[in-house]
Length: 192
Length: 192
DNA sequence: TAAGGCGGAATGAACGTTCATTCTGATACT
DNA sequence: AGTATCAGAATGAACGTTCATTCCGCCTTA
Image (cartoon, rainbow over all chains, first blue to last red; front, side, top):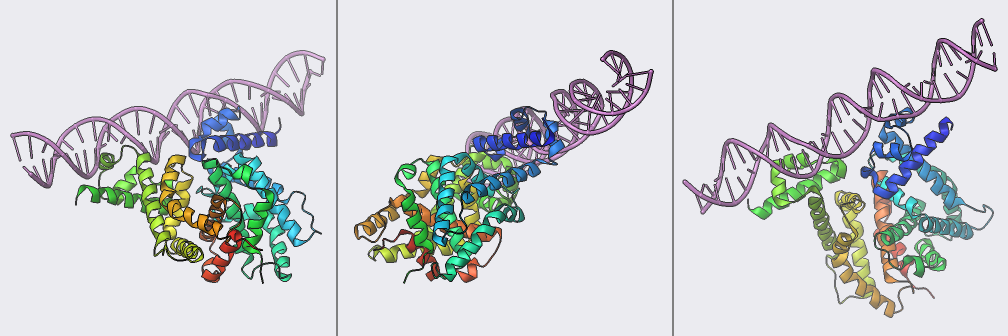
């Protein structure tokens, strides 16, 4: 096993444990056991536990961005592209609730500072911001700052799924893709 | 100072400290200092720290519910009533970011179990669910479960303000009440 | 090819700190 | 005086981090 593999192994173990037990209930000793290494070894790859958490966060956001942008056709219409991103987001969070939970946990952790959050979102924003800009030019989207609309929709979807995780209700079976898009577009679409 | 005053004092102190430093950075000793009492005294009022946190959560949700339902006119139209609730929510979270932050912190804390969360939301739900039901009957609202629409809007607003707290941008100045309602209604409103 | 040695990687017991909780003696009230 | 309440020191468990030691693969040399 080479250097990077072991590093990845530690990050993966940390992901698993935090998703299962929460952030403050996963001591380094537990990560070490899960990663089949000594506690000291972890400190060969990460200066502090905080740095490990930061890396976990960035790794997760990378996966998250990949999932959202999967199969995006940059030549398609704005509407089709946003549909794709939103459905990807929705499906990913439904199918990998572990990651969604992790994201919730980490986004309020003190280790995840503002700048790091920016870094995590960067790749996604670079793709989506121009999309909103185009939609706006085409008169398709409300005259409200793109960030506001984008964050609102993201917050709606993620909160919907978080609520369902906390108290499993009918969301997974009753909310069709069509319904979801109807809500999302309703929120941002310009009407006349 | 009577018994309840001291209890309230401890809860208030805990609120202040968690809002300022985060949950896991506020030890009991610090709460004791802030509340001007000994650490042991806190254990006269709360069995464990976890129970204290639970009480903080319920107190907070009570304040939150009050704020959202303030001035609600039950004889007004569904549209007017929902406007009132949403604007109350938005203004409260903008004007008392401390409470909004606290709510974020606590809603992912392991101490806040599913049942407790239900209890915290109960009063709000009891008022709002019938509102959605009426709106649905009047053909005003999408044929999508009320919970889904309600949670989506709540999630959108709260995430919007959380994002702004993390990296202060233009939300407070640029998003007018009118814009916000346009987004919220767009998300739930039935169109034909 | 075999033996010896070298250096980075890994280990996990030990350390110091922090924290929730308990204990104890003092204080205020009746 | 007796009871209830308090403050804060004491306690012990749990944690992040360190470090002396061990391990292991590779290179050198004969």
